[in-house]
Length: 221
Image 1 (cartoon, rainbow, N blue to C red):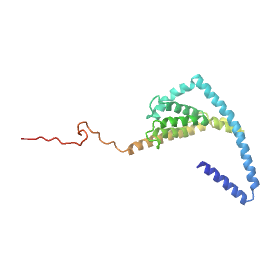
Image 2 (image 1 turned 30 degrees about the horizontal axis):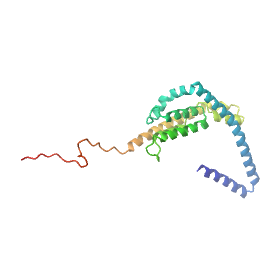
Image 3 (image 1 turned 90 degrees about the vertical axis):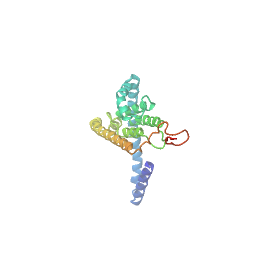
Image 4 (image 1 turned 180 degrees about the horizontal axis):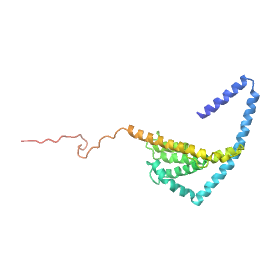
């Protein structure tokens, strides 16, 4: 879908440039965009390498384990149907920790591994479980303390105050996270209400072995 959208934009731009006789401007824009993409990528690589290294140092120092212990009760509340100690919990905690630092590129592989582990708990492999939906919502709207990637982009483009968006980013992501959790809780409840009721349990002795129920009658002579 995304590839189709990008292809459509390129084709439309090419057609309009050809019709209006501005192929030179179109060609120049293509090369300028490629040049800017490489420049921005190098700027992002340096910042991402730095924060990935900081995360490795924090992991070796035990800081991530402490963060995981702090987030443990939160994860238990958000994912009540995931057994305690399941491997998915560790990947979820790593995903949340990376998102807190604004490291989306580092959070993505952890989110994928968490989804794979959650799939092992899924009785219906064709339908996402509530835990999967919760993880997707949190990963999309995760609260961010340090938007490292965005700061790197602003720094690369010569912003006078690259970190000036920390406060607004924190507020925006906090609101988004609360909205995501609220929507997740609401849809979980609606799913439970729409679930068909369980059939009544059959008491032992109501059915004869291999047969149907036989009413008890007394014979009088």
